[in-house]
Length: 330
Length: 200
Image (cartoon, rainbow over all chains, first blue to last red; front, side, top):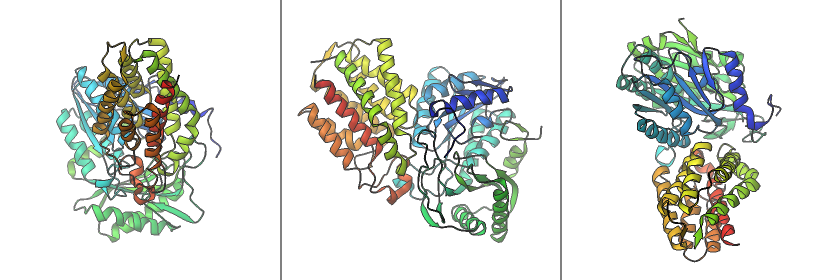
């Protein structure tokens, strides 16, 4: 696999320098690896900090800006950032109203954010945490590290960001974020593995004519491997898998998310099948988002996330947002 | 008696071992993880060695505590906090002031460090993690450093048939069986480096 890089060691720093050049509305600290909205700290408002391994762009740095995250901490590729980054980010964005850490449920992210929360509290910053764990492909939570955080992260960051922008206090922003997560489920498939810069070859072998069902977003193999399926069959499988775990009574937000190497042409075609299946299953749809938002480097494939909403969550979802990766209403 | 130099040698030998075995660790991390264990530890222990040269801690406890803090600050992922906590808590258990410690004190301190890793990560023996190498190593430390290194290596080898219950490999369920755990393998390197530091 040929990559548009210099050397693997500088991939993250190079991307941050490029991001800084493209987005003057963000403060990008390349050395310390923190991306902060330029107007932070915003007086009287709760700040949102997230972070995780790099390779999932636009998540998380691309979601920094008014109406979404206050700061993001990018780690090495597929590696959680370190507590120092999170504490630095929290200190940069805290207005005194407190900071919410949005953490995807992976062992590394959880451990580092836990350590960071303690250190930030030592510095007098009020910190709350919300864990995103929407991936239903992980069925056996008792004997695993638990459900992974995937596509729902976008909905949590968007809706909690809107609540913070409205000036809601930390407890409310936290409980809204938790509500979004509790009402979200995702399922992903891979049509090809991804290639990390450090390794330079695919993370797993997927023979031609096969696909992986139930993959995460780190190039790890999925729950099972099957003979290649059509877009229609994958949509049926994914939607049905999600609906096994979430029986929405209210309308849902739908994210049809590309893993990085699947063209939008295919994603829109896949979305048509997802919408057909949702209609067949009697699930009312409030909003649909299609695109590459929570990616896995150059993995081919897609995930489906459903988030059951009520009027308040929908209003917050529709609220204006201005970030490199998500932008509407402004 | 073990002095600060011994612990510096331990860290340097670990950095060299991780450097030498980086590709192997990353290869082990590919089928059941995300193919970065070697490069992450390489980055971490290289920065530990650089930090020790700069800060020049003078006691066994401070060498390990600072090394642990450095890993937490540079590695990320799960291995940063876990290895960082292992060394930091072992160092703290040795205390800041003692210029020399006995092998028995080190064994007790390591037991405290391993317990801290268990408390943080929640893994128990048999979960297919670094704990599977560390626990038998600490038990064998009463005998000799070489025996500890052997026990760690056997513990790492014995993770191959296990099904992972912690960390990213756990998502694979039964498909994690048949692969040697990269974390247990790097933990065995750490213990082997301890034996190397003693063998001068």
